[in-house]
Image (cartoon, rainbow, N blue to C red; front, side, top):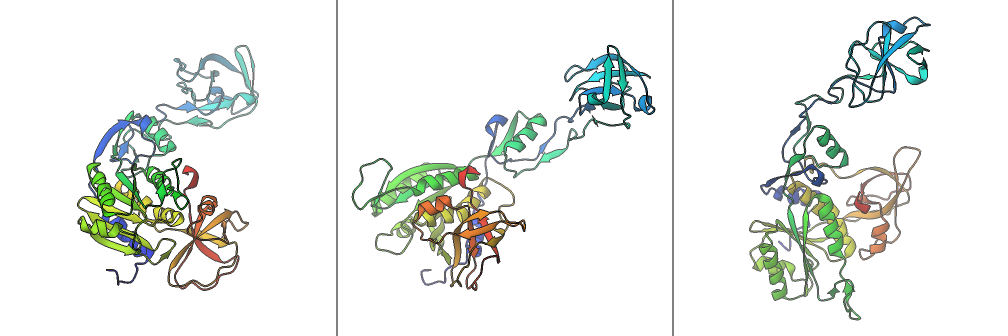
Length: 411
C-alpha cells in the first residue's frame, strides 16, 4: 500500500462516505432538544395551518359587494380577535372589527384595512373598495393535515423546528448521534494551561475537530493525548472501543517519520486499511480504515491540515452517519479570484482565502499570501478554501475559480 499512488481528493472522499454505512439507531426526543439533529422518518402535519380563514390585516371584515360602489356606510356589529372570533354572521350592510390572525366571520369575504376606513361609533365609512378575498388567508394556506413537510434525513435547524411545532409535533424521532472518539498523539503536546516545556506545544487540534463533530451532529469523546509509544496508543484505542465509538479520529502521527506510529499500532490491532495518502495540500497523510465495527480516520498533526481534512472528510462522514441526505453533493461553488495564482503541481491545493462581494454577483476569493500548514491564525481569518486542481495553469485576478465556504463561527 505504501508504494501506491496517492488517491485524488474526490476518490478519497467517495471511499470515506461509502464506508459510513453503519445502521443508525433511532430515538424519540422533545422538539425543544432537537436543534441540529437529523430526522429519522418523514414528518407529516397533524393539523391544518391556518385551521380556518383568518385576517392578514387589522381592519374590518365585510362583504366586498357592499362597498363595490362608494360612498357607502356599514353597521359595525362586533369584533373578531385572534383566539376570540365573532360568533355571528355578517349580513348585508354590516361589518366586524377584525385584527391580524383573527378568524374571518361567516358571511364576510374580504377585509378592509383600517387605514382605508373612517369609524364613528357603530358606523364605518369605507374609503375604498376591495375585491373579494382581499387580505384573507384561506384555511390551509400554509399546509393541510397529512401533508409531509419534513423528510427523513433533514437536518433540523431553527426554521425546521418552528415548522415541526406548527405541525403539532411535541416530540420527534431522530437518529442517534454518532459517537466520535478523538485521540491526540505526540510527546510534544500538552493541554492548554498545563506546565509546558521549551520545545512543547499546546494541543489545539482536538478543539477544532470536536467543534466540527458537533456542527455535523455527532457526539465528540475526547480521549486526551497519547505519547509516541505503542503502549499509550494501544491504551487510547482500547478506550475508544470501551466508549463504543462509531469512529476513532486520531490527531497526528499519520505520516512516515520514526515517531509516527499511529498506522503501525492500528494495523497491529487489526485495522483493515483503506488508504493513507491523498494527493492534496495541506493534508497529504490521512489514514482511513476500519477496526471491527469502528471506523478510523487518522488526521494530520499540523493544525491547518487537520482542519482542512476535517472540512473535506470528517464533516461529511459524520453527517452521513447521522442519516443526513445529500451528503454526496459536489463540493465547491463559483467565485472570482482576487489575486493571481501560479501554476499548480500534481497535488490538489486548498488555499485559505477571504471573501468579498462583487458587482457580478459572484463573491471574490482572495488567497492569503502565507499558506503554511502551521498557521492557525491565518486559518481562523479564512472564510473559504480556494480549490486548485492538480496541474492547474496560472490564473489571474478576475478568473473564475471554485471555493468551499468554511463553517467558521458555528455557521
